[in-house]
Length: 88
Image (cartoon, rainbow, N blue to C red; front, side):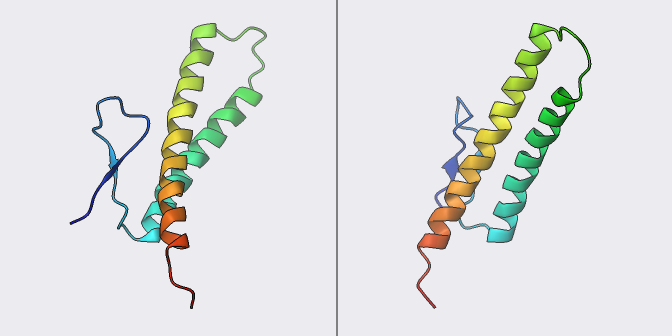
């Protein structure tokens, strides 16, 4: 039976990672989240607004933080899987 690993970003432990999922699926999930953060940061970088609203920046930072943490959690699961493989 698979022991699902909770994502660090969930307060009430409702989102989980299946550590036995195919590595390609885990990679895809991590990549999507990291790409989303990169795109958010590029949007901020391209903003020509002299004084962006503080609340807007706070929302973007929070979204980026959640996505980065989710991606890092999945990468950690992948690292464990990859380092536990027998040499071959």
